[in-house]
Image (cartoon, rainbow, N blue to C red; front, side, top):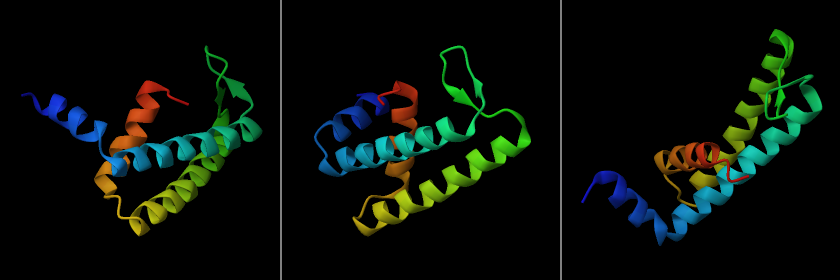
Length: 97
């Protein structure tokens, strides 16, 4: 069995993985909401994008604060940081938002 398949099947029934995905969705939704208020640019999909270094700094600073909050919560409920990273990447890659 491939490692990717094993990881997928392992997470499919794991309530902790589902919790990590939920937190990952919250992370992306909060960051996306902030981006909509700060960013003056748009990409080809009409998604807000920072224009210039000032907007980029604001977006990055906010994302770091949100990530710290999410990671803190994940840690309190026992979600490993590696799993949290995987969930955030999965939500971003699948654009499940």
